[in-house]
Amino acid sequence: MEKKKNSVGELLKFAGGHKFFVYASWILAGISAVLAMTPFYFIWRLIRAVLAVRPDFSRTAGELKLYGWLAVGSAVLAIFVYVCALMCSHLAAFRIQTNLRMKLMRHIMSLPLGLVEKEGSGKIRRIVNDSSAATETFIAHMLPDKVVSVVTPVCLVAMMLVFDWRTGLLCLLPAVLAFLAMSSMTGKKMRDDMAKYQDSLETMSNEAVEYVRGIPVVKTFGQSVFSFNRFKAAIDGYEKWVVAYTKSMMRPMILFTLATQSVFAFIIAAAYILGGKGISETLILNLLFYIILTPVLSTTLMKIAYSGEASMILSDALKRINTILSFEPLPETETPKMPADSSVEFSDVVFSYEENKKNAVDGISFEIKAGQHVAFVGASGSGKTTLAALIARFWDVSRGSVKIGGVDVRDISSKELMNEVSYVFQDSKLLKMSVLENVRLGNPSAKRAEVLDALEKAQCSDIIAKLKDGIDTVIGAKGVYLSGGEAQRISIARAFLKNSKILILDEATAFADPDNEEKVQAAFENLSADKTVVMIAHRLSTIVNADKIFVLAGGKIAESGTHGELLAGGGLYAKMWNEYNKAAEWKISSDRNLTEVEK
Image (cartoon, rainbow, N blue to C red; front, side):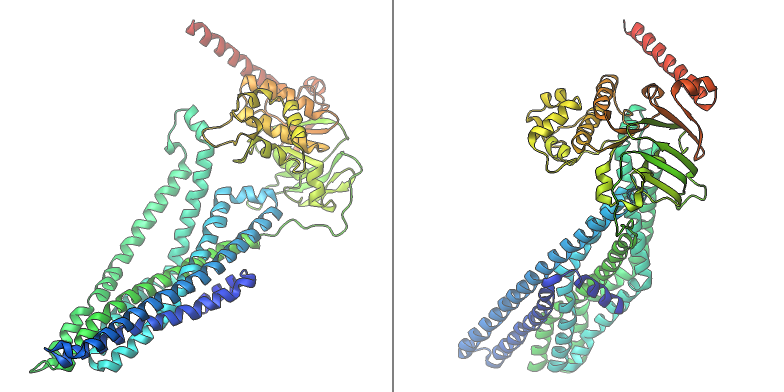
């Protein structure tokens, strides 16, 4: 019980000035539970009055009318008070959910971007949406019901024992059996099972997001869902767990349902046991009263069962929310400094991801002068993307330092660092909003004319021309979608508008078709003017004019120099260049043969 109190107390921290509504909902729910019992008392009085005057019912018509209206009036009043309780609980629930989501999003925004990528957007989205929604459901509905489920049994027991304690005790027997069955389904085992259930949903959500992102690959190579083994394994694991859990709950749930629905059988038994040789008027009165009253007991037991499950869901939701809140944000310096220029310097930098024992970057030192264009190349896992991420401070280095304009990135405020660095990702991130709003993310204060200028410089004129509402067209709405290359050019327009001194291009032409690639390259040429540019590239043809190329292997710099110097050296880069040209020649030959076949 302590855990439940702590959970509610933890939620009330987010209620702010709406905490009063939570307490008001408890009081009103308790009053409504008491009022909901009063119609049964008036019904009992009505039945007694009828039995007392039978068969001449005309003698008590006024009394019957009075008790009837009192029963209806108290029932309506109970409903009204309960609706007021729900209104108060909903006002508090919406405020708590809003504050909780705002706190979560603010905290997530302060976390290293690398950590967010590692945890998975599907998992984080589910915690922000579903776990916070669980708190709203609990406060808005389950909390008033929990009060009702406590007050109602107390009133019921009191009424059952006052009117006829012997019949009352017999009617309480199924309640005891139902409670025992419910206890076997709750407790520590159910808490553990609920956690496993939420884990499996979380895993499925995360893998589903990854699968949707990979659909272009699936369609290109004619594969199916089974090619995504992790997604299929997540579905299979969920199915296996749910079936096993359902079977384990089958017997106690049957016993619980049987007990809650068998109250009438106990009333019949009471009639036989207590009736003896004859049926008295008082016995008939009490039996009729209990036949009317006992269904409330079954409903109350069901509410208790569901409120217990809701408490466990809430406890698990708060645990997941606290997991996100427990992640440490990147520390902010108390004395921020301004970089002198757009130069970048790595000094004996070491970095490793938590799950890997091996260093992703191992003792790297180099310098990029302001305005210089450099490229990182190497095999997958060589450390290219990690190096670029460290410049933008997606992570903090384990050892050494990364400096921009002579200032350690840890000594630059996060806002200023984001102003200094633009990052164009391999997979462009466009939101479901208008082109104008998507581009304006680079500079929220930019005017419409400035956005149009940025789009023109990013070679987006043809994209805007084909959209019905131009730059006001909402991407992702009413079937409006952009290709990978087109989305990339919109992202470049965003970078134009931001106009940072340092530009990081992470394999930015990866999803572009030949026509789009040409326009993307032209956009990059415009964007790169007078900027320090860091390119991560697999297409070596895109970096031949770079001022310097760093070749990485195993988290270290294997060699560096211009394209010509590296080819003359005959090292790793020269080998990569030869293999790249062979692959390009094979592709050209294949395309030529395909054209001839089509002819």
